[in-house]
Image (cartoon, helix red, strand yellow):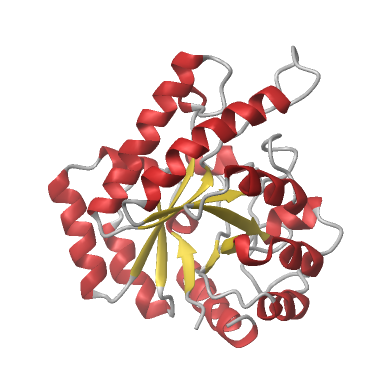
Length: 287
């Protein structure tokens, strides 16, 4: 049965926060999984990682991890020094996740975020090739440590390297390793794909995880994403990975600025109650 998860930053204005309160919160709201910031986990002490792991085990909660690599850690960089720093950072993140029992790291693991193609280039092919080169190092490194890397397909306004399902399939096919799979996100799909169902079927067995959000990044079930169509396609490809909602409602702080929230998306939201209702919606309509 598909697990239902949520990204911790739904509740926060900053990326670096104490994760422990969310580990005790989300199971009571109907979630099986909590997605954390992989970059923060790298900076925790071994004792702090052990505490997180123990708290999640006590709650029977699955942990997964997301990352938008910063530019100084760009594993697709044409500069060898930058690329090597990125590989080192990603390996440390993989090691940290492995220390906590393994799991999935998804997001911009293949480049950096947010990013536009350098004005000096007419083609992204050189960057694509460096990214593939890096992922052919990272995927087996992760796989040997019970960690799966899910390359997220991001819209053109946030990244340039992999913008739709066709490019994603081409990318993971070139990497050609089971440690590298695809993360689709309905928010980004709404911008880039002609059809939600066709995109899911195109990705097929490469689909490692699925992010949920409405067209404006509200909670699943409150907008116009065609969830019935998505459910049918997920069933058709026998997807059994996690469904992790990644809504953002609050302006302010680094999170609000990075995501681009410049107004109150929901007036005076009861975040816990919105999360609870959306978790129930996802279980009823997508699990």
